[in-house]
Image 1 (cartoon, rainbow, N blue to C red):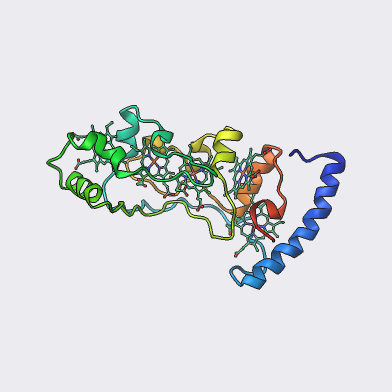
Image 2 (cartoon, helix red, strand yellow):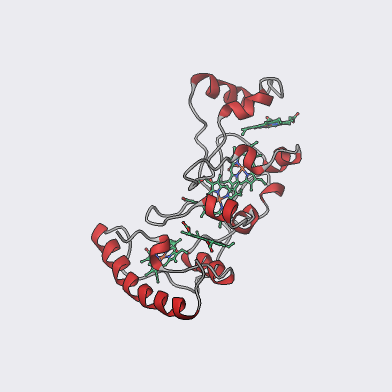
Length: 186
Ligand code: HEC
Ligand code: HEC
Ligand code: HEC
Ligand code: HEC
Ligand code: HEC
């Protein structure tokens, strides 16, 4: 859907109506405040996020593994997902098995208990987001939203995922910015 001309005007009218719907909706559920977020809050990169295992993207991407080998985007495509332990133990059943970290990994797989990775990027529940639309349909690179993951030993939030950062990129790509695109008002 492209926005321009008459369609643009129509969208602006619809956007006005949607603002009321969103505000009504969020107030009804009581999840969020009355006003949309402020535009001019400067973004500060986050602290390194501690993980249950010292997994390094730099090391593993350096081995030739591709992002979507591990982060599959299954239907309906909202999530990029974390890899199953079997993906890791395909190598680590034999590699570095003397490491206590790898022993923990092997034990987790054997027990069928997924490693509880801590989140680096997390939207509030009331925001709709789809990896498939961005990565597969619109061909946006992972790094546009997650930074230079391939050169990091430890991840931290290095790109903003605020409402205005989403909308700023949508404007750049001539993508829609109606409230209900990202907020379910029904
Ligand atoms: C347009 C921005 C954008 C792009 C492009 C993008 N992501 Fe994300 N990613 C996000 C946001 C926003 C979240 C938080 C989602 C949430 O909390 O529901 C996220 C979350 C994740 C997560 C956590 C699990 C999940 O699915 O919520 C992983 C893993 C991830 N992204 C990997 C990737 C990889 C790999 C790529 C490229 C193939 C990629 N992302 C491309 C914005 C993006
Ligand atoms: C393609 C094979 C391969 C895959 C798949 C793989 N790794 Fe590795 N991993 C390696 C190699 C090679 C090293 C470096 C070993 C060394 O230092 O001698 C390593 C090192 C590690 C280390 C550091 C261990 C230590 O104590 O030094 C951790 C932790 C680790 N991997 C976790 C994982 C996790 C978690 C996954 C799955 C998400 C995974 N690996 C998938 C090959 C792999
Ligand atoms: C060998 C498997 C593997 C590969 C390949 C891999 N990742 Fe990951 N990724 C992981 C694991 C395990 C985690 C959880 C630990 C962490 O955050 O470092 C993770 C976490 C992430 C997160 C943080 C998700 C969140 O918000 O909690 C992002 C973003 C991400 N990866 C992007 C990428 C990108 C981009 C690439 C390619 C450049 C990539 N990954 C390649 C295994 C992998
Ligand atoms: C790097 C640029 C970029 C960023 C950042 C970005 N988007 Fe998008 N987004 C796009 C593009 C391009 C499209 C596809 C528009 C089209 O279909 O014409 C899109 C489409 C969408 C759609 C439409 C999905 C559908 O079902 O059609 C939603 C919802 C969305 N984005 C939400 C978000 C949210 C929420 C964020 C912030 C967390 C975000 N986007 C950040 C570029 C971006
Ligand atoms: C492209 C996606 C996108 C669009 C379009 C969008 N939002 Fe948001 N909105 C977000 C994200 C992401 C957040 C959560 C992050 C944040 O607080 O910045 C959010 C948060 C909010 C909040 C909660 C603020 C708080 O501090 O609790 C309100 C209210 C809101 N949006 C209203 C609106 C209204 C009204 C519109 C239409 C003018 C709109 N949004 C359009 C993505 C979007």
